[in-house]
Image (cartoon, rainbow, N blue to C red; front, side, top):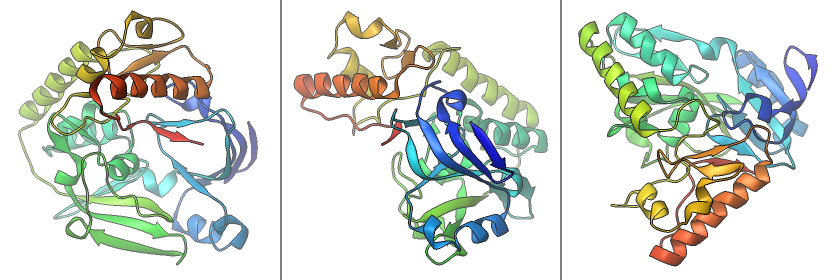
Length: 291
């Protein structure tokens, strides 16, 4: 990995920072600290013309072995802050879900306990409408503030104008999510803490811990549980080896560090094939795989 200046890193190793400890090289990763950095970067035609990849906490993104040759973006600085206003919270895309949950606990703000167990960042959360325990980010979101690359301008859209769905949030092309405006509801700190601990207990009991893991591999089909479909479609060989399904939860896999990202992708395809053959259902990936 080469650091060229405070805004550009060449040959960035995604495997080093990924939750999976796997993934190819991002040839050019631009660190963006404020909106001026964004406007300056995307005023260049050569940058605008390239494919774009915004990375957050790399908890749900896998870059294939061939690497990513376009423009990688990592938001920092202004986008790591949380600001409380009279009727909303302004939360930067780079704020971690777990951090926001703890921040809200400290301020006596309820409704964000479910984020305590999600390993991603707010930008990624808004992108995929992440959630758990029958809650999704859209339930708390007022609006999304984003940068339009083609216009080189910042816009805001109210949640009522956006079509969020299960594991599909703000995915407008040629844009970068900068902030989310979120609802504020005050609650008792003891109750907030209790719920956070309850969610953590459920996660520790039902999901693998202290392993290289990306969370759920697949989205749940309508009225179905992905883990049940997987478990009933595979044999014991899928629970052994350098990439293996978790015996704790069949919609999670565990892998050895610095293993080929392409081999992980192949493993996922094998699971899809087995489920399709057994149940006539094609599972849709929750893990984002970048070619």
